[in-house]
Image 1 (cartoon, rainbow, N blue to C red):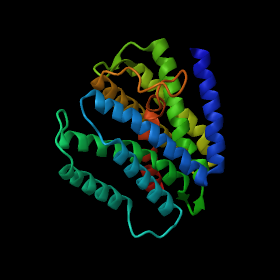
Image 2 (image 1 turned 90 degrees about the horizontal axis):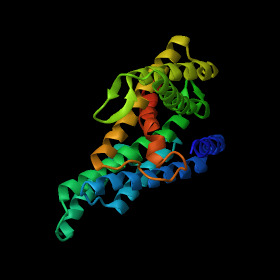
Image 3 (image 1 turned 120 degrees about the horizontal axis):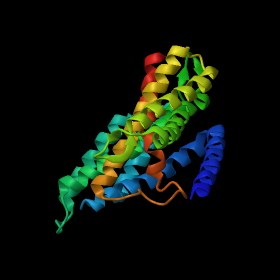
Length: 273
């Protein structure tokens, strides 16, 4: 199991490196696939609770949102904003309820709510890959370098939290959500993130203080993202979100931390820049 997990991590890291080096359409397509499989897993949670989200509409809405983000971040002039995409999608989703027959076990409120939540949580958060990659920092296009900061932070957080928690963990962090996570592990995760961002962040025009702050905040965001997905799985009584990645479980099991780190990092960049 450990060898499979390690091999998956190595192959995955190599693929991520190649994709981020290429950028452009390849990155757009990759994020689209992440959204597609991430939505499948999220809607699985919703269905386990009795909801019947509209998977097709959810996927279309998420991909349209991603495409608008991609075009706007590449300086295409569009007559629509990303917020408008969400509003129009919600408008059409609610109107759709007028034209479908009421069936046993369906709920216009519950089904629509889980569909739009999937679009915002999966489609919206993954779209920050594109926003960060095309971010201009201090007048320079440094997105290809910047995007690795939340990735490294979430990886270092996960690794150090696991190792420190295994060795020194005694006090439960969130027993109702994830009994195996400890306060000691969480602190270790923050330390790991700070180390990673300090070292890698030296490639960017960031002071040591800014790198430490980024490392701490991104680690906290990563761990919150992990706990959020754990709460969804616990509520749905599902152990793993899927088996897409050998040794790691589902896509959301691997990317839950990054989903929260990406938007957090983007808005921190705006604050700093």
